[in-house]
Figure 1 (spheres, helix red, strand yellow):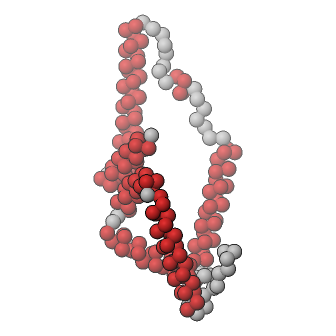
Figure 2: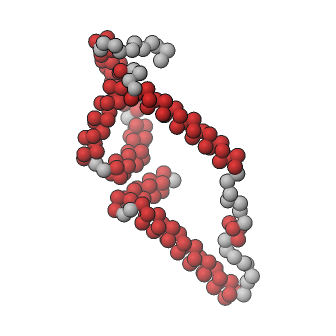
Length: 179
C-alpha cells in the first residue's frame, strides 16, 4: 500500500514540476473520465451481446449520497479555526519578540531557508520531502538504537548551548521547567 501511495504522490509531484497545476488536474480528470466512459460503453456492448438487462454499471455509486452534512462541515471549520488562531497567536509572539530566543530561532530558520530557496524551488522541496517521508521510517527502524543515542547527544548539546546563550543575552526571558 505504501508503495502505491509513494508512486502516486511522486508521480503527481513530478507532473506538477513539469506542468501547471491546472494542466495536471485537467489531465487527471480527463483520464478518469476516459476510463469511466470506456467502461460504460464496454458494459453496454456486453449487455447488448448477452441480451441482459443489468442496467447502468455505476447505478450503485450514483445512488450514494455524496453531500456533506452541515454539522460535519461546521465541526471541521471549527477545528480548523482553532488551529488557525493558535498559529496566528504564535506568529504574533514570534514577530513581536515576546521571547527573544524564540524570535532569534525563527530568524535563523528563515535565514537558512533563504539558502534552500536559492538552490531549490518549492516543488523540488516537496519531491524531496515525499521521498524522505517514505525512506526515513524504514531507515530509522533498522538503525533505531544508534540514531536515538546520537539524537540524545545532540539534544543535550543544544540545550547546553541554549542555556549559555540565555545567560549571556541581555533582556532574554528566562524559561522555567514548566514551559
